[in-house]
Length: 476
Image (cartoon, helix red, strand yellow):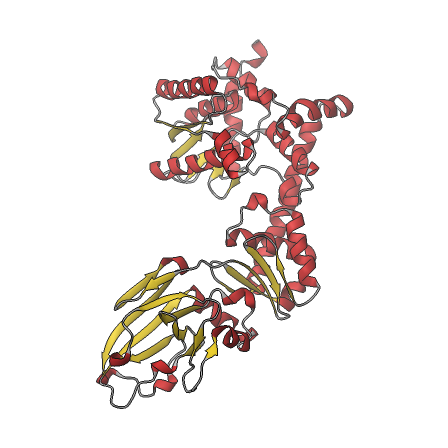
């Protein structure tokens, strides 16, 4: 096999150059290497060891799909790490049960378990990145799979050399035959996974049935053509991403952890491709899984918003709303109730602080009527003892400052032209069922301080609701 003599050195150099060109490694030498025991990950580990400058940690997940074989895989990888002198991190999961309980495919459950575990290993070891063994054949399969599902340019650009500034793929410059020849010439051992032949799994049908047919009919260059398509689309996709990022700085006028508001006229002034990309960029920031954001979902949002004023319940949690001046996207705010005491009250569920302090008469403001909207004072002697900060509830009422009767909180929010999607964000200060303060919007008659008062209690609110509400004032 004389013609393969230089392959190990050449392949290692190819990977090194690719890693440098794509900036896959940062200044931190600590790197977690995901090793399944198959030829791809074993060869990748061998190449990374050859770099000599990295502090490598080997990580392996036993998915519990092939009980005896998967146990042997884990033992093999642990032994391999020990032979090289590298720390080993193993984890066993029952992916079939996880898939069944969470309504996922076996492939999705495995991916979820792997990613969670690998992130935990990175955190534990102080690594900034995790290397996986994806190569150009995997890329071709991914592009075909996404093409058949009707993916966007982002999806068709395939697997990225680096994603989330965390997952790196040093072998994405190699094809499977390069890797197998390298492994053989290096005398490496590896495990074989019989589930790769299971054609009930879509990726395996692509690999074992569709790609062989395409290569037979159109020539052996098909995988490389698919990779070239991915490379070209990746460049286009990166340009569109940068345009959308610039657009977000102009179009987004307010945001919290659960709500993002867009200036309607500016948003609809962009090309539809930028609109789609903006929505795709926003949804993960509201907690949606990027892999589950399909074109059909984005298209439903845009189609409804283009029809004018109205609200669309996109999913169980996600709502889209067009008020005319605003396009709002948001997920349901958490229901919370926190007892309030003197000092700084931290409300982590809404990322807010309510500071409560006693003040003697000498420290009273000149005019209580001119307080900022996120500050309220109460006469110490008239202040209820059991105060809570909570979300609004159906039927909540308040006796507004200066009024003799009470009003529904919901009516006040409507009068303020606060869109329905934002009303669940509004926190209130309450004494059991009586509302004392709709924060940032309306105070209660109970906050009146008489001339004879000698002590008062000052409340000051800071949090994401305040930032969101302030930013929306020009639009409501």
